[in-house]
Length: 81
Image (cartoon, rainbow, N blue to C red):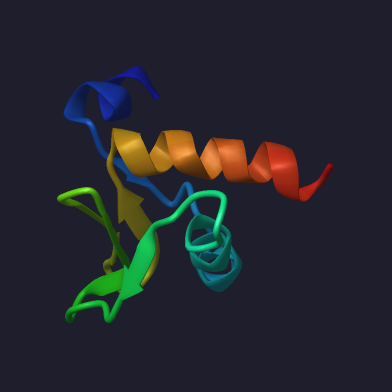
């Protein structure tokens, strides 16, 4: 995990089945992200305050950076509560 973290990419962290619920959570009025149409090779694209974040899809698993990883872990804490 430390080598993965050093690269700044998390592979397979977000199940593809969680992407619709995660994007809906991000785009609610509390969080304010705007869901955009993903480009080829992307599972999700969101935008807010000049920032665009994406979850990539390599055909087998999701790939995301640190910011999405942190938001996904927050999502997991609140969706089960």
